[in-house]
Amino acid sequence: MLKLAGEGIYWEVIESFPYDPDLMTTGDLEAGTAAIVPTSRPAIGAAQYSAALTLAKPSDARIAVTRVEARLNVNIAGLGTATHLYCSVRVDIDDSDHELFLEDWTNNGNKLDAVDTTTSTKAVIFALLANGAAHTFYFLFWADVGSQATINLVQLWEGVGSCQPAGSVSCVDITHTGLISISDKIAVVGAGSVSQSIYEGAITTGRRIRAVTTTAELSMGDNTCLVGVKAILSVGGTVATDLNYLDYLNIVLRSER
Image (cartoon, rainbow, N blue to C red; front, side, top):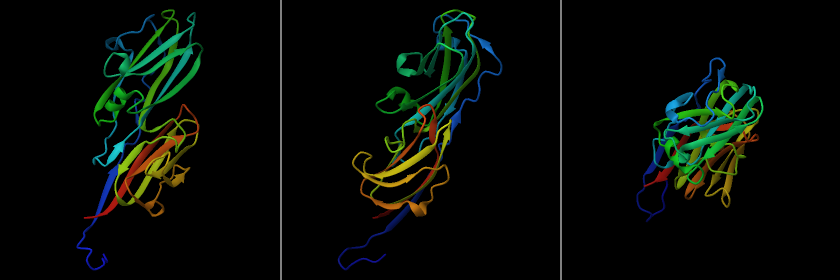
């Protein structure tokens, strides 16, 4: 490294960090068709379905997950004489702070919903999902008339990402001063298109480094830049009930010490 006289001695430090959150899913929890018996919300000890998922946490504190999205899919085969089918999805603990979804459906068919969790939206759940440990999702169903409504599909997905448009919210913050190179791959579960944006500093006031509307891998050669404080990765899509997520991320940081 070339230095001017009087600048002192510096070391160039190059660090590489892989992060592979991938896609977590329960799979379809209902192998056949089930009738919903309760007429009031059951406790999690009597949940009709439950599944534990673990979302990986970055190995370095400079990489911070800022948004975890979840997507729910339930298919109502029939309502019978019921007019309302309700669903609550709770994480680990049976209270409203741990309620990820609360649904009220009034007709047959495939039901989709998606939600983002952050430090300000469903903050208790976000702290759980982002901590790298296993957490249990409890699926609680009830109807206004017992043993009438039937379902034949129950599935949940989670990932680092958002159901918002890309470029509108942060999903991963990378704290660093110096050169940074990023490669990654994004993906979508759903009918829409996924895209991503990378910013330096802040989404609202910072400089957009790159915007990509493809699920193909984003190469480091296209995304090497100098950042003063941090880089922000935003992943999103075009359909509000899709899961737009970060499949994997590779980061190379260059600094001087």
